[in-house]
Image 1 (cartoon, rainbow, N blue to C red):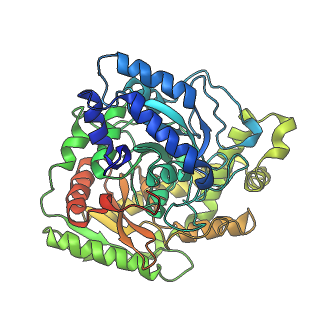
Image 2 (cartoon, rainbow, N blue to C red; image 1 turned 90 degrees about the vertical axis):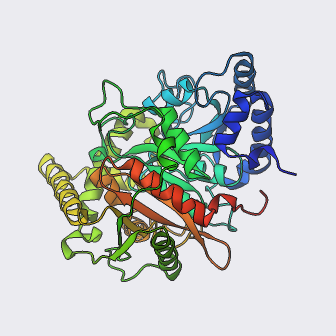
Image 3 (spheres, rainbow, N blue to C red; image 1 turned 135 degrees about the vertical axis):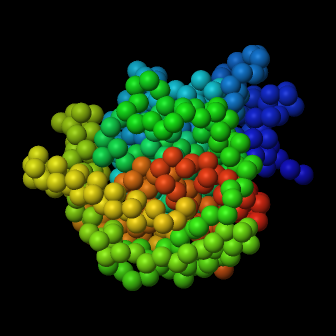
Length: 470
């Protein structure tokens, strides 16, 4: 017999609106699952059980209004929630109570979500693993000891294990997409200017979005968040309030889809399972009437050439965050990689920082010109399947940074360019470990990606896969 968590987020919202289920019943169900599995998976740093049940009872007493009315969901700990503990993944500021919600957080709360808790994230977020002093490492429920990736690893672990119907995530260089890949989920990074933005930082690389079990659930999240606000610095043309959900139901006309499997690092090839994932996806897309065009990566666009300027930009902004948020007496509690970034950034002057931003901007422009010959780009999401927790922490410094870029070489380009991209869980290894592919489009073409992903989901049906213990 099916259980409540078997229902999609869309189905749960429909049942809440029709009063077939209550928010109290649904919230209690997820809180029980979090208590059973959340700690072992490293999914949460805070669970607000009592407050969530109070909010659920209040939702049941009101007439349903927002798209997410009464739906229990967690929020990623890198983003502030007014009056609730927010640590930004750092034990050095654990217990901080923000006075205001972040922009996307506020929209989700206005849409009626019931806050379950805050999901685990690495300190200040610049990692494709989720390990901190606040919780055990975030793990994929699909494999013993396998990393859920990062920085949205806690959110992805929670959704994949059925501890939440979907979850809030964010993506600075792939931090929504690689956890989605490791945990068998859909993860979306919207175009810059399509939803409210985080504060300008990190060269405006970051974008918030969902990890979800289906494309429709992810589209529901985006519609609940809505359009950019009057204070946002980047904006795409206006669209209907249900644009994302509508797009999922409309398969796009035949597209030219570029296939790229060269990661552009100092390593030569993607893992065989990542190549198989792309091959399976290409065949499925051809069956849907699309043209697959193999692409060669030009030498100037090899990601390895951007490692130094990327670390300069991240390091300076991370140092600024640490200086603003962490008292001097608490800085010894910062994680080793944060300490490394702080030390490294102390030697970066204004000219070097400006040159780093200029190099990233020039590379992004060149990438968009190169990609203009196709409608959509298909790549592996990561350069290899999920690795064991701790495997990328070689020295918590330069070697770790290189290892992370080798593993997640395909995702940063969408962040550099402000383009929409998503990870889709099309493949599993012989051991049942999920492997995702990435679809990327030109800036503003979010609906095209959603329609393509929705059609692909009908062929692959990844939403029916679950880990042991589901």
